[in-house]
Image 1 (cartoon, each protein chain N blue to C red):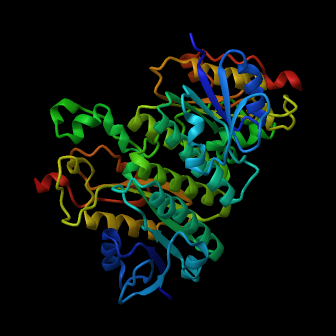
Image 2 (cartoon, rainbow over the protein chains, first blue to last red):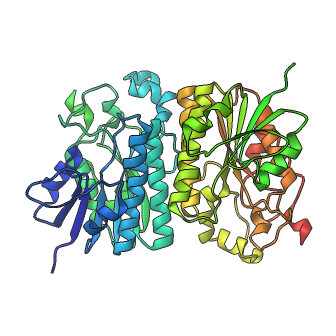
Image 3 (cartoon, chains in turn brown, purple):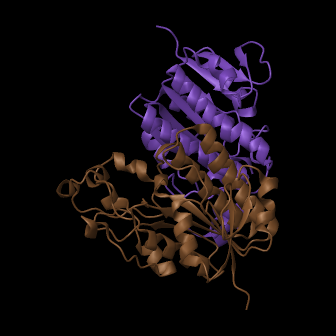
Amino acid sequence: MARRSVLVTGMSGLIGGALRRHLEGTYALSALNRRPLPGVKCHQADIADLEAIAPAFDGVDTVVHLAARTGESESFDEILRANVIGTYNVFEAARRAGVGRVIFASSGATVSAWERDAPWSALIAGRYGEAGPFAKMTHETPTRPAGLYGASKIWGEALARHYADTHGLSAICVRIGRVKAEDRPMATRDYAVWCSQRDIVRMIELCITAPPTLRFDVFFAVSDNRWGYRDLEHARAVLGFEPRDRAEDHR
Amino acid sequence: MARRSVLVTGMSGLIGGALRRHLEGTYALSALNRRPLPGVKCHQADIADLEAIAPAFDGVDTVVHLAARTGESESFDEILRANVIGTYNVFEAARRAGVGRVIFASSGATVSAWERDAPWSALIAGRYGEAGPFAKMTHETPTRPAGLYGASKIWGEALARHYADTHGLSAICVRIGRVKAEDRPMATRDYAVWCSQRDIVRMIELCITAPPTLRFDVFFAVSDNRWGYRDLEHARAVLGFEPRDRAEDHR
């Protein structure tokens, strides 16, 4: 049986690199990337150019769309090109090529402006006694974007829903927490929102292998952090996601 | 006392025209419009051009942002320019000019793809017996966009929240139902989602006059339709909105 063909955008990034190491050997991997990527089939193009990226989608079963300007950028032009137009282009190219599923790297930044308010404000500042008991935020909690970056990820989730509804594409949104090059929490806030590299790549693989009957969904992806406020039960129930790491083990 | 200065984008549209007639005489009205508008102070510019629209915002207290490509357009380039970039430009120009409040004409299209599922599917098809009793959808129900247009309005709401959180702007989103030139329901679905012209202009005026302590909120705006599924209690509680019309009176 032919191996499943998986196209990864943004493979040169931190999560993209970890994902490549995790998936290599199991899937027929390819990359859509601005920079060249030695050792993997790579289509080099700018994600803001629909016609230029289209050939990368031929014969692909599943797309993992990681390419994005990150939360550090507050340049609207950059966010617009890479995240707003780029994510539209990925869904549209996937539809035209008959791709079965797009896994969209969304972000906790779709909701993390709630951290302005109690009890989240106390939690992310490490004032755990003050935070008191709290219910976790779910994927159905109203969004509240952190910056233009968060708004662009809300846009991407809306596109995912639209393409799933209208074009029969399976679209899964993963709201990724804080993944670090050092692969451990580095700041107080990370004890709430950290996601280890092995937890995120495992989550993405579960999205790749989930049955085709899964047409649309939204999941948080963080490690099993004691002071985490983002629900993991939904990902556990639907995907069988069992995070292996906990931020507090790295104190 | 000087009259409140209200800038309306898209005043040449159906709702813009009705709003102009309703507000004239009470407020110092001005327009930001592509086409000339006789009889009102009008700054002519393309909303996709931030520098070109900026002068329209000088000295403005409140912006009512109606300009948009409507739900009939499925051209991404049009939606991108008018709704995605245009709405960013309006919030950004408002921030730079120190405008106090932006009222954003959002749309029921932020949630109306729920009409694909029961009981909404039966309701909008006029199979009222089949729909059975149902709870109304609230402004906190997860979004589900109808088309790229709906996705662009979800983006606009995310921007509204971001500007309210980060820049101290008061931002109010009004999810407008189906407003018709004939000012009455014309299709079966309209019995659920119709909004009369006098109900929408009254709603917008309530958003203009709401106290400055209202920093961010989202309201549905439809008439008091018997088969409506969009909650009006929140607008009643916060704004005192009392719709005067009902779609079923026009059967």
